[in-house]
Amino acid sequence: MLNLLSILVGVVTLVLMIPAVIPFLGALNWILVPLALVGALIGMASSKNGGRNFCLIVAGLGALRLFIGGGLI
Image (spheres, rainbow, N blue to C red):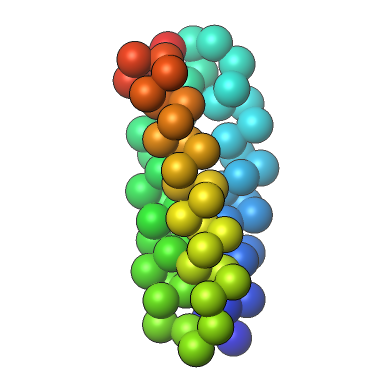
């Protein structure tokens, strides 16, 4: 059940990251990356790794976007 909750958090975070790709909305990732990491923590409590890995990939994508945009853009 926790794995499914972790995947759900990851999907919601990924959908919310779509507008953060637009220039000048990249700062939204400062909220979304920690949300994905919370999903990864939930996934760590599960016996399966799928939700945790998905949330870590989503957090990595958000962190990459922050890195490319210099943290603000």
